[in-house]
Length: 129
Image 1 (cartoon, rainbow, N blue to C red):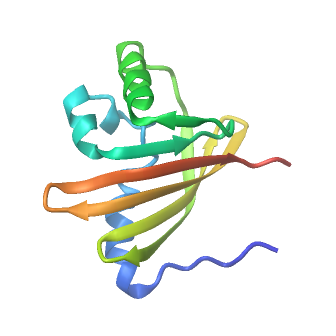
Image 2 (cartoon, rainbow, N blue to C red):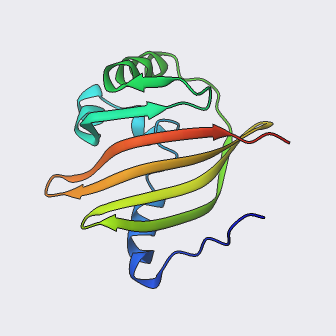
Image 3 (cartoon, helix red, strand yellow):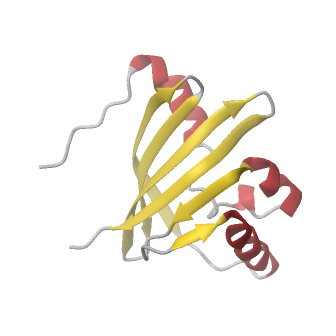
């Protein structure tokens, strides 16, 4: 039923670079200064949460700043990483995120720029049993 997703050879180096940055907004890497997050998140960024709600860049940055002030105890595991080039310097990275009993499929659109990697879009989809 599920497709067998295998990252193409030419995308494997990018897969490893992006894999180290995920899960976005959950790891310690993104609990730093707001200015670092603003650099990472593209001006036109938006997100669809696992709830199905859409979130603006400003809302996400504000929420992350609140989390940084009182970091939650967040135990998670990632698996099933897949990366694919969509256009020059634009990549889709997908993976599974397990947080306790909650399993979500994640998709992030990344763009490589002269300033480094930028997040264009993110979506989380709840996996039901």
